[in-house]
Length: 164
Length: 203
Image (tube, rainbow over the protein chains, first blue to last red):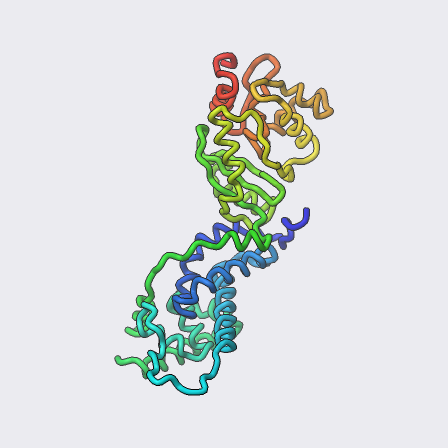
């Protein structure tokens, strides 16, 4: 059998069940992190990467944290690619457009997206995905204390930027 | 410690439905090990599942308790890369529809026999050769599979047929004329026989 049974002895649910259960949460996370314009591309890339890795997964106990880890990596890839694509302008346009395009989601999220990457990811996982600090730490590869601090710093910064 | 700001963040996102997963891209990358669809037929909803080699499973919706249970079994026995990808089952669905209207007397979609083994596989392969509209006995299929005294084992193999309807285990009856059992229940066996020849002669 060429492909098929490459699994690690863990009882993994059918991939479709994971997709059905976690799809909406993953999409919300990506809308919050990369914005509605790019969320769909990142969403497809997330699930394609997850499907590629799925049979080799060794621990099926927290599939939600796992798929959000994949989504978070895709969001980082997305920001890196965008940074590479950005071309410095020789001259500033005469009438600068709005800092962030109006994408139909509340202004508060344009502030979130402008946060340093770790704070942005941590606050999004905390509020959009409603994760415990232990899971945020696991996804971000940090200590639980660092996860807590990133959320705290993000909130502090947002409070200074946003009207009360 | 949920203050107004946190509440605003939690509430502020539109809840657009997630887009459908692009199964074409997944298929193009050879990442769909098991594609499936649920298909309505005169004998109830069927789960149809295929690997890249061919149709691997036909299950009555209640056969393993639920379709979810059948899918979980496929995840364990074939691969956890189980995806709803209806278009990959288009040919099988068309052939089944034709079969149920009486317009088709044999199935031509490729089959993946990986869920069958040993003697059971031989029994099912010989069962697949029983012509439309005719019947055989447990003893006959056992003999054809190389074990003339294995009619009980043949019965077990037919009861575990992963491809009912397409591999026509409903055409195997007791040699005395009794109906015998059926994966999907004897009512369905009668329905299938009725489609092929008329139920009266088996009642």
